[in-house]
Every structure is written in structure tokens, then in C-alpha cells.
Length: 55
Image (cartoon, rainbow, N blue to C red; front, side, top):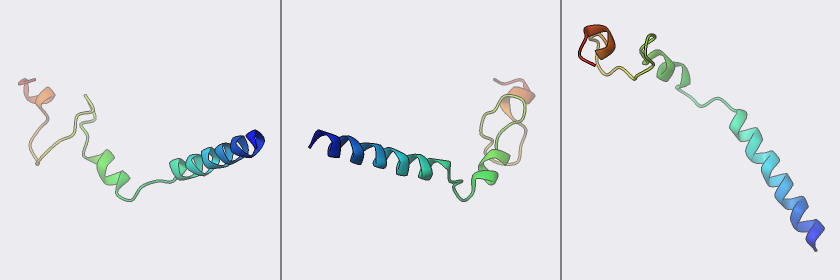
């Protein structure tokens, strides 16, 4: 019984690992919305706060 539980647990972990490797849609767009200097998300088209001297 214990071997069966451990086996199911390991199979479940393998399935979760496979889903974790998948790239989510829109990932490139999210990475492009980050500031290349500090890594913050940019909202709008203006400069980042680290580049404008406000942050």
C-alpha cells in the first residue's frame, strides 16, 4: 500500500514538472515589458523611473 502511494506521488511530481517546463502564451510580451536596466515592469510608453531619476 505504501509503495503504491509513493509511486502515485512520484508520477504526480513528474506530471507537474512537465507542465512547469511549458512556456505560457504571452511570455515574450511580458519579458519585453520589463525595464532592461532595473527589471521593473513598465506601464505605458514613458521612461522607467530608474532612468528618469524619480526612483
